[in-house]
Length: 492
Ligand code: AMP
Ligand code: MG
Image 1: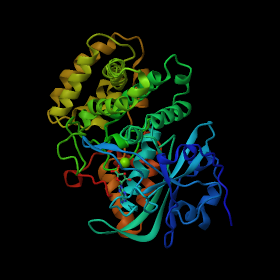
Image 2 (image 1 turned 30 degrees about the horizontal axis):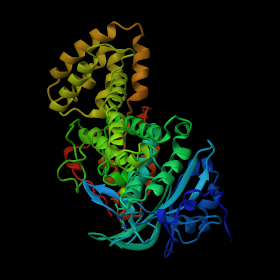
Image 3 (image 1 turned 90 degrees about the vertical axis):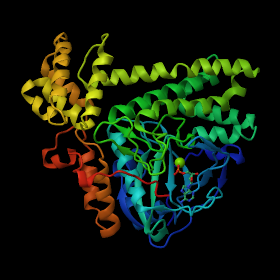
Image 4 (image 1 turned 180 degrees about the horizontal axis):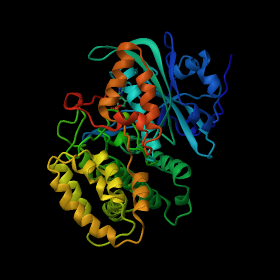
């Protein structure tokens, strides 16, 4: 039986040095463990077909759908500050592109689908645990309204992968508005392939920044557009307590989506120095370091574009620098606007920044849970009788009282009724995030006990992060000390 996907591939038509043509490697006995039916429909794919045995074979890479033009994309990247001229999709294969119900082009990629010419010493495979983590966190980010790649499906392969221990193998089907990274530009720029950089820039403009095409200087507009989206994305991460964990340039998407969920995690108690990733020993990618690191990555992107910006290098550098200098302000504007909303301010005033910062400082000093503090603050906004639930999150509850008095003074000046403030706060401060200890428990049940009920339940809870869902109240709670997860692993 042949299965047709409505592919309309454009990346595979770019110059041949941009990728390697390679088919996925068939696996033993693929079994679908999760299908994102709503996403399938949005992509114009038949969920019944994908849920069938043939569908599982496609999602495992064992059977190629009609119209696929499978490729592994070439890219380079700075990993923890060190340039590696050739990385590329070592365990991912792009099947092709489809146009979704919104008219947006989407890559459909298998991750863990076997070796490619870019695998280096890797096996091209993925373990079940990291596949489930990516599925959970990427879908949670989407529901929280943060630009992200999506997860269409997870299959187990029936084969084992060797990591520190022997683990079940799995394949994730990832959907992105593209998989083009800062590192994709670096791959071409490092080879002195200026024509290639131009071709890639033109492709990216047509695909992600169409308004840049009609700008007076399209490549300047492209750089500016990428800077704006990164600034806004990182602000969103900080506002929700997300730590990516591996913000290498090869994990920085040009489209402005969160990409490459590895040792990522959400913070429980607020601490700007939080790091989870086992491979980030210096804290380079700590929570509060994410904005300067994003800028560092954008500087690497700008370096690739220099030959397109001006004929004279000095002029190109000066113009790139002017654009890069806007990052800090753009980030800060987005971040501060988000923080004001988190504490329920409808207007902007001098002193607001200090007011929020003082709350964050008190939270850090008192180990207050980041998500719960803001969520419960919404109820305190309605009625100060609800202060107790916020106070008790602070090691020294009086730290909250002092702050709350100033906060009430500030909000009293605004005309909106308390109920409206409370509702606005609840719409930006989720009750449920994918807490690390929950993810670990889900993975354990699936990997050790072949039990996917906890995975399904967690996904159910996270599908409505802004609803109270009293029947799932436990999922809102931070870990008990013995449940705390201190490290996360790439699992590669
Ligand atoms: P990551 O840390 O997942 O962003 O991966 C960094 C680079 O290593 C990318 O080029 C990946 O394709 C490659 N890689 C990671 N894991 C594997 C694996 N198991 N087999 C082959 N390549 C891999
Ligand atoms: Mg990566």
